[in-house]
Length: 219
Image (cartoon, rainbow, N blue to C red; front, top):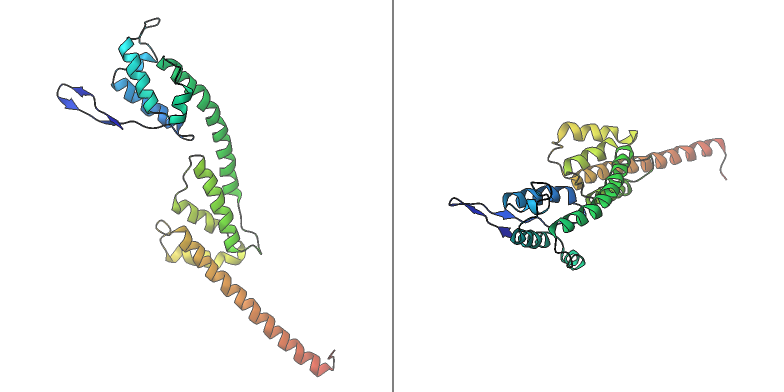
């Protein structure tokens, strides 16, 4: 929904932002600026101490705030007739949630920074672990760009993958590479490593058999 104030023949439209579980800080800044542009913010914070806001403006501000919050929250606050009470109620509720969200997000960021693929762990398993942490961060309002995920993936590879990581970094534009593409290239290299190890095991086994035959050590 948009609201369009008109001043001296010039109109500007404002898209009303809707509050979500993860956007309170940005939402509050946007809503305050829009309400101020309409002359409605004074119903929340009077310009002069002790000044009583205009009744019509209070009704307009209340209607605006009810447009900017989820429907289920409108029902919870339907008894409020003062926009200041609505604003303070939202602030109390969401700043507590915001603190918890910020703490959880900080923990997730530390996990992402310290995450390393272990020797013996498959690329698929590690990529799923990395994607899972990125998804949790996204649910808390922190969107990891594709390029950040790709770089985090490459930086987290064990020593056995250093050759392919160096090759990818030298031969491809990481800024445009998709996460799934990077995973696919690492998996292809992983399969080649496994194939080489199998061939070495086979050749080693054949060599050992020949040695046993020559020594008469057949069992």
